[in-house]
Amino acid sequence: MTVKDAGRGRVLKVLMRGRSGATIDLLDYTAYIKIYESIFEKTMSAKIGLLEGLNIKRHFSINGDELVTIVFQSVGFEDESTYEVTLQSYKLSGPDYMSDTNQAYAIYLESPIVYRNKNKRVSVPFDDRGDVIVKKVFERYLDDGSTKSRLFFGPPVFNNIKFVTPLWRPLQTIDYVTKRCLNAPPNSDPTYLFFQTVDGYFFTNMAQLSSQSPFATYTYHPTSTSTNSKSSFDSFFKIHGLNFGDMFDRLAQTEMGVFNGTLLSHDITKKIASPGSVYNYSTQFERQTHIEKHKIIANTNEDFTGHALQRLTYVPKSSFRHNNMGDTDLYEGWMLQRQSMMNQYYSNSVTIDVPGNTLLRAGQVLNLDIPAPEPSADGKDWKDPYLSGKYIIAYLTHTIVTLAGNSEYTSSMELIRDSLPLALPDTKEME
Image 1: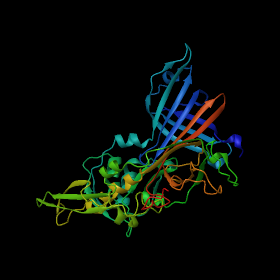
Image 2 (image 1 turned 135 degrees about the vertical axis):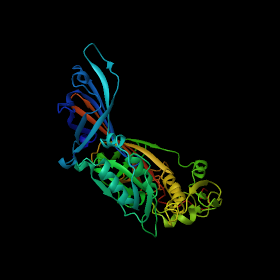
Image 3 (image 1 turned 135 degrees about the horizontal axis):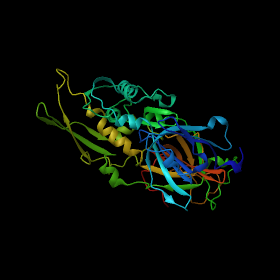
């Protein structure tokens, strides 16, 4: 690969198939393509911008039952980097008339399982491990049998979940189960997710995602900063755009139960209220799996962790609602911990724009090298120790803009993490 290849793409196919079997390749009329993946969205989506003068939307009768297969490559990578996804149309924007003979409009696409999810309801009793329930629901109601609808599993779920679905949709059922899943001790890590990438569907937790080795290292080199690095630099892994979110918002984190919380339960069978359980960030941190080693606050800081009533969460319980079986929601085992851990991941976030790369996936770990905006005495310690380090790809957008036969290809990502590579000092270090 060469420097000039970075940021270039090659669109091979934009094939639309209607219910009747009619097909048309929209490649010559495609102005841009945007494809979205996220670990916080259950399905992928896309948007295709068309510029055409054949009135395709009328003569092809686009009405929401079309499957569109998009195939493209990163120029400079090997053939195995070909990106292929098939999604279903669900919305067509109104046209903008560019001239008497040209119009521009967009086709919006979603995963085909969204339609199957809308058309089906689940009313089944379940009493099994959470991963087993997810597999049953997925295979029975959502799987279309294609290789791209394959379901990949992370750590096995430790606990059983017993409930009856009250005519929920399949994805709603999966969401209910996902929130209640724990993996085996000693780290319970109730942070399971269900999401889709171009490779298929994933049922895993943040602990497994955080434990991955970094897929790649991306480096930011603003023109005004010199790193004096002697290592070779690959233009494919250069950050072109960088935007950090708030470095912290302690008021919001306190309100969301990141540092402390108390669970209050009310047994509607016995009419008894109980204090439930208490969560403390400082004591629980070492029992959880994190992407980096250190807390987002100083170790001895009890300004945020020393108040158990920072956040109160109320839940109903119903003992012996299943004959002689006690309550199975197990709120004490997951609710406060999940509430804290999922919100911890937005304690550090950054959005980056990089040259398009078809090998990127939502859920991968990336390593960032970010320069410190301060003089470096020896030219070696040029990285910011708090901004650099490992992050998880939470949101990923592939954007291809076609221009006169060439395609500009960019990958934009929102990266998140729940911890820091360097401990915050307990005392001020400024001199």
